[in-house]
Image: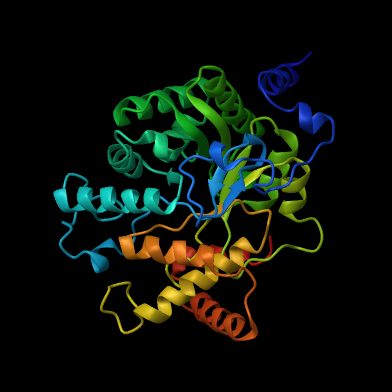
Length: 364
């Protein structure tokens, strides 16, 4: 047997799950099979959805790691030099993240996703002493397949995970999602992809990650990965906005349903382009922007294949607005649909140059 087949066999044989897939069993993405007593941080006012074959029940809206526009909401937070322009050591910043996480816990949100070193450090600290209230999604992308030095072997990727766990004080993560190069299909070799899948298998065997997957902005490659590595691809993160819709044929969601894969939607507000105001509490557009945010979440959740969108939330008020969206009906009426369509058309027109790629996610 050649090396490729040996590695592929190792990757597939090393996973703990997959029997249901082999038997052709596809489970619904709903809470019907889970008792409320088994749902982490259950709140009766929150909806919970099954996170694919992980079996976890996640809140229908989760806490995304980004804190964009935080200075508009809380100008007292000191500016820094990280990529979100906040000083992680600033007491005002730490207070804000602690309070946002606290309100998430209060309303029943039970998953936080961190996709950079800064985010992991911030949320690991904010969750100290209450890790049992939220699942932790982890991607220290600076140590992952997005960069050439790390994608060369599974050993390097595991080393990066170990460093991240050590620096953040985490013993394990609930969901390790390796950040892949963008687009993966053009920039990563099959061997490099196999390295990532092997690392995911090793991390799960070693108890460092309970469940595994990737994040990717490459639809066609994601479909291939779900079909080719179903044991490692228990779930994934990928863009899904209020303008996205399922392709009638050869959709990514065909593979999601067949292989019972959890899906977390990033960029639900199109990198804040959905909003007319600047997110400050005294913005003249504040009330209308709150409505746009709720409409977007309701629209995204109308696709049952989506486990949850992951908005970055900068304030307690924004958390409360997301909780309000969950209690509103899913289906948009004619007026609401027109409001959201108009807002998203304007968002598409003003997307910054580095986010034009979001337009490729209109059909998924």
